[in-house]
Length: 113
Image (cartoon, rainbow, N blue to C red; front, side, top):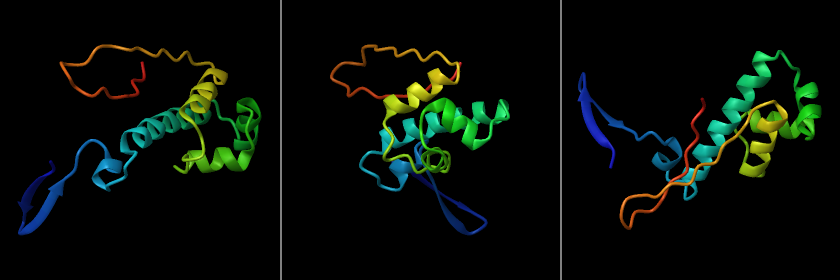
């Protein structure tokens, strides 16, 4: 549950660490994972000084599709495709499966090392 505070007479609601959940998206966890993957892809492209056209060629996707992904429009792109993009950009991606607490629902997160 989000916390409400008052600052200088203005009521402020403090959100969670997932803005998609705060906005009520039913697939909030998946969207947050994709946002973090897209952010990492964008950082690598920027650090390598790649044009979007050259990056799209390396990633095996049309440049307009890459452009949309980098602007946060990634509903039509699977997590698997984003992982493939990271691999093509020279990154290893490790998937770790671990047990949760008793009867708890598991979660997916992105950790960049």
